[in-house]
Image 1 (cartoon, rainbow, N blue to C red):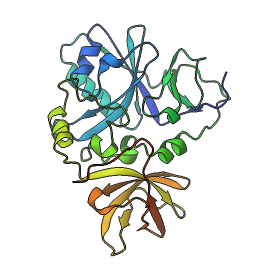
Image 2 (image 1 turned 180 degrees about the vertical axis):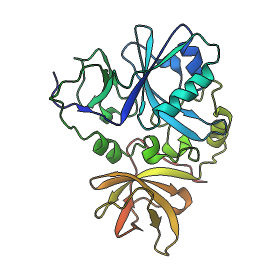
Image 3 (image 1 turned 120 degrees about the vertical axis):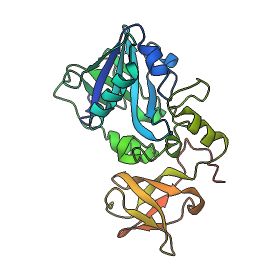
Image 4 (image 1 turned 135 degrees about the horizontal axis):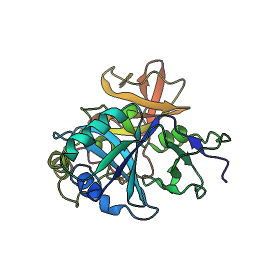
Length: 273
């Protein structure tokens, strides 16, 4: 058994079973549920009808059961939304937060039956849903790995009910399918993409010192606000910038330190028109 996995205590699990589980999700979430295959996980989100971010999560299917891995803080709200959208669909939705734990590792987790590769980036490693987690679980710096790669995640980075998935480059990290058809918020999201209406985006930054708190303002050399700091770990953070005001490699002030945005390897270019 790998000795470098980590239990993510800030995650919870919801299960969906029943013959209409996929059709329910397909009509409301950003990604294509038909991408769920044996051993393949899907990253996705649920939006408001106005295209604003509400929740992001991972999906994995095994033995006609879909396992949904989400933030524990927002699990109750997400659970309620799923129940609302279910209506008369033949789907059973169950809170499994007391039964399962979510674990992650840079190495394959083949010792756990519910394991899959993190679909967002090759260096994000692997995830698993486990009923029994050995006490020897070790830290493997999941948050450090995620933030250094510049991958936004959940309410730590998105402004719930205000931000959009395109601010977090959801297409580049395999979280949205623009060919799948309708879902909640689809029309607004597609219009933003095809009309180049993305004005803000999250980018990784390096920090010159101890990180200020989440939400701290980022200022340019003239003292004008151009963004906000989001989640951080070690000498890296994610920041939300107005794209017209930011330059890769340029230093900006944030509290008592300087932050320097850089181009992540998965981002080939941003349209900042």
